[in-house]
Length: 218
Image (cartoon, rainbow, N blue to C red; front, top):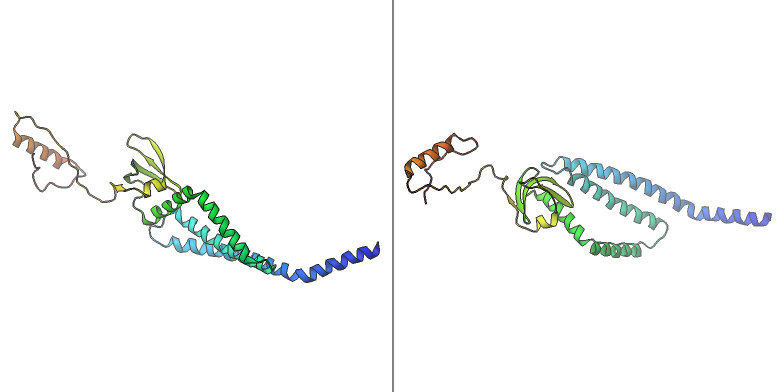
């Protein structure tokens, strides 16, 4: 019995002697890598915060994305410390990522479109737009969907890919724009009086540019 126990103890000591340094090295790599990933995320977050007009939704997303990339390299380094063939492991991860990407291609398309909307900023919250067959005021721009409130007060949650892959008309982007209004005048009315009345009325209204020319009558 004592010989069996001694054999077990000797085997444990041998294993600790052989793999102890590898375990300590792997733990050190994991702890240091975890700290570096957190530091890199904070640095990226601060750096993006200094960029003008950087969206508050996009900044933490990019910072976390960089953190997970660093952690992926840390995990590969830990496996390499134990002698695991990382080339095969990377190939498996690549195949798994491809399969997940094909399964979630619609969702990933929305994410990619959301990133493009947040980076290029064809519109912002509060703008009135017409895109993808939808017209209304933008309430929120997310990574997957955007929220729009129509003129009738109807709430719409639209996929970002539907908006990004269509022509976007932003009615609020420019400070001024022209509006054509057709006014009907009876044949029995005085055209000059009607024209002067309409022009005087428009000049008294606020929020409009001064009329440099008299309206054109069809």
